Amino acid sequence: MSVRVLLVDDSAVIRGLMSKALSADHAIEISGTASNATMAINMAKSMQPNVIILDIEMPGMDGLTALPELLKASPVSKIIMASTFTKHNANLSLKALELGAADYLEKPSSRTGDEVNTFYRNLIEKVKALGGKSISAVTSSPAPVLSSKALPSIHLTSTSSIPLHVSGVKALAIASSTGGPQALMVLFESIKGYLKHLPIFITQHMPPTFTTILAEHLSKASARNCMEVKGGEIVTAGNIYLAPGDFHMVVEKNASGQVVVHTNQEPPENFCRPAADPMLRSLSNVYGRNLAVLVLTGMGQDGMLGAKMVVENGGNVIAQNEESCVVYGMPKAVVENKLCRAVLPLTEIGCYLIQQIEGR
Image 1: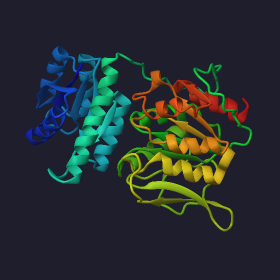
Image 2: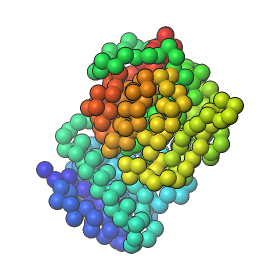
Image 3: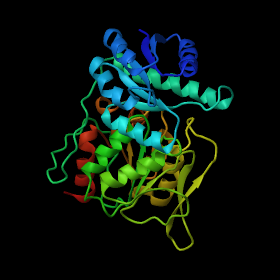
Image 4: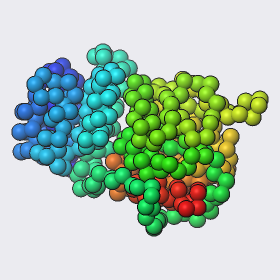
């Protein structure tokens, strides 16, 4: 069954670019195109497309205003927000994710060359991944924020035979992609006030500007200092270190034995920069068995090879379960390679970490 897509953009040029890319894939069907939000809402109601690609900036009703109306008109649809990546639009896109959008997409600034080819690849990958979930009717309600004062009992959905060494955990690393911003907000709300002795490192697949805004959002959600890494920071307990867009983030010990964060622009891994694998390799080299890793929702298998090294060095890996993922790609890769100690719903992960690491 083909993934049915509705394209919504006031630019005929952008609609043409997206139509050209998507029509080349036989697994995708263009159900319709709309030049404004009102037209899109009416079309979505009758078409019930699997995926809607929605422009943020449109005359009349903008994308952010149209988003809840589209979700109401077609509850089965996964919505991808499309925009140029200015700071203003990054803010709007993250707000859209909070309101129910599944993902975001950067519009190309040129019509030829590597940039447009990257746009085509990302567009097709996102549509097929999100559309596949829509077709399979695997849906989940928005994850509620957990109260850290009332921790539910934990029932592991799945475990491997790898023993969990939690008494000496000194750092937590998180890898995430599609659906990651929403998942990170839920996670940090649920561990607010706990795990203060740990530095936390995050690689979220995001472009520049977006990571700047995400760091601000996570600081508020976590009540911690979340910084978009510039390079050269000395790691301090309680801080959150977020890989900047278009840079890998790695750590090493300096001559004084302090852990220092660095960035680099070495080639992308798994088509990603930042990528989780370089982060996990370097953290495993520094923290060894004292490292805990969390793999959240996302496409592809970035983080799998890094997680393998973590386990070989005695560390622990936890994955988000399929039902609570926007896209079950990255977690699936570590689960299928038997690298996980626990596979849990998003709403249970924070409590599990608190109970296991702090013994509460």
